[in-house]
Image (tube, rainbow over all chains, first blue to last red; front, side, top):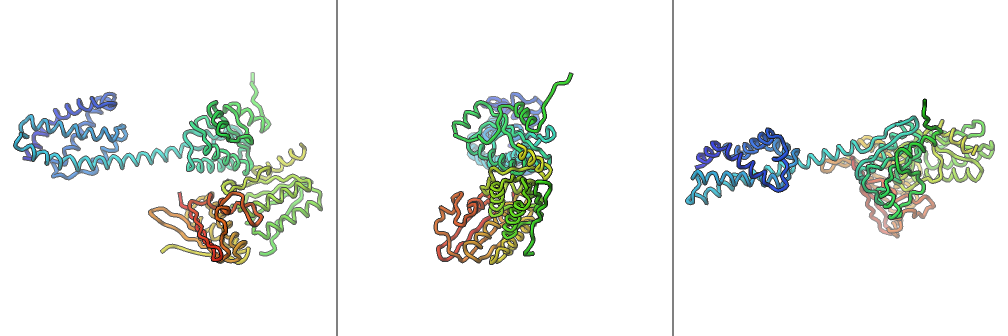
Length: 274
Length: 121
Length: 133
């Protein structure tokens, strides 16, 4: 009976895939099947179909390596876990319908086939979702590391002047990293003035301000001066509304203005030459 | 070991101190006394204390340093601290020691420049 | 078996010995310069507290390895008078010795974990941990 089913599935694979793609395209909020290049959709679909059917053919043994491979692929494609789940459901439904259509499943053995399908799909679903979540976690961790790496570099701009552009949300962990990079950089680059540019920081709350004040204090201790630049109007509003005291700081609205002040502080100025 | 004193050098009207090793409590207090005496003897108007080799400062040493600066101020001299290491600065801030109103510079050379400007001002 | 070492605190010089031990342990455990300074400073504060308030005690340093994480634990124990008002001791700026009062809350900020067991008249044990990032 199982052999018959496998044979039928394999013979009608193209039809199953076609129907499955059509069904997936109708999913709400679906992007992948609409916007990705045709050949990529085709390849991914075939891979998915193959993955779905290997464990019937190979006596319910799931190929873990292929599965992890596939999971990492769909995570990169941006498939949500809901979408992956739907893909499994759709595939199973289409196959069931097909087998009914070919009269392999009829009302005498339908109960039996429900069991066969459950034994086939359930472990597959479990493993796919597990592979997916492992892959997802790995991706999140990698992004975290990537964020840390790009998050805090001190750039020497002129002799004695360096700039650190801050981008993204600042939490305690990142604040520590920023402080260390800032201070090591100041000492290494012999920067007498550092400009901390917060243009790219979306929200400055009490905690973020506290970290910035601490960093500036530490910069003062190593013998340099820290200026806070890139204060957008809405940031200025929140700072005052929260009652955060930045009186001891030199602050400017733009990096350009800050740079001008930094040059003045180090007894220099920019002149136009003819 | 017990009587290690920190050498205090005089250059024109400036005293230069380079702290080369970890300070224990007694040496720190001895240094405070020696520095004030030296100032009194020499009528120096400025002091530069270089801390480049120091890899940590706890609240006690920070207090001694802070006191030295206040006392020197009372005797009419300005103090610049130079060469505080990044790790030391971070630990001080996390300890809650801000050393406000202390003049600092990246290194001895910058420190002497800064002191000169302060004295001229 | 975990690796453990200690310094008994009787004199001011033992404070220096304790932080030297701490600095070496921190370095050998793979901590960076900033964390080395944090650990050394925390030890200095705790050892000085023992010297000032209890007169004598012990500072132990233990290397940790738990769930794939590595770190250092400092245990400062004494049989001194104990801490009367825990809340006050943990306030920034509080000091009974005329210091800067950075002691306890400062140490807590320097380390990742911080725990105080104290009983008036019996003694105090302070445990502070730092994990490798």
